[in-house]
Image (tube, rainbow, N blue to C red; front, side):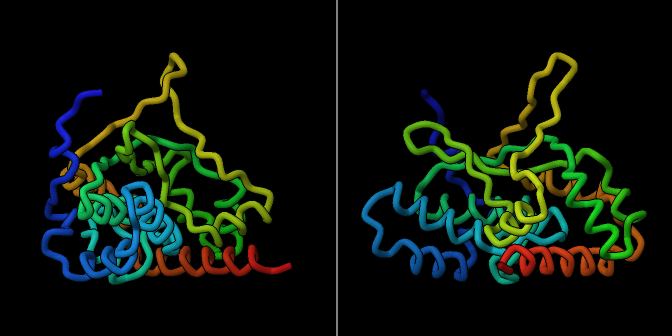
Length: 217
């Protein structure tokens, strides 16, 4: 497959590995003893995946996600792309629609006392993950950390993303070299408005409880 490799190695305002010493230092710490590109990818992906998933805004810089130490699918994917590009591994964003995990969100709504607010999210959600070039494009999704996945499985949930299809049953993906414009437009359509910080804090508290639940025998 022929493509412009340089297109998928560029920084942007949100993918700010060129100006962030924190990203540069973390990548060097993670990959300093890696002998090849595959090893660098695996080390970086494992690091980003295990950052806890939590609700936040869509348009955060990669460096801000790293400083916070947690993020939503868009933030964690943006950090992954930034770190991979910083070591010369082409990567891009993949955006698509998924169906909500009704079991997870109904239980979280009941436990949090916010069932009405969580319904504002709708049954379909935007999701962002990553495609990485390692001789061919491979999909990697850093969204959920392993502790969260264990909690979901223990609760009886399913880890498979349910992709929304069109009227012909086709899955539609938007592939982007730069996510900045999409992220800002998506942020302007944010579901939660009033009391957003409090709602996010409660959702994230419930996600922490889910992780603890997954770790119990």
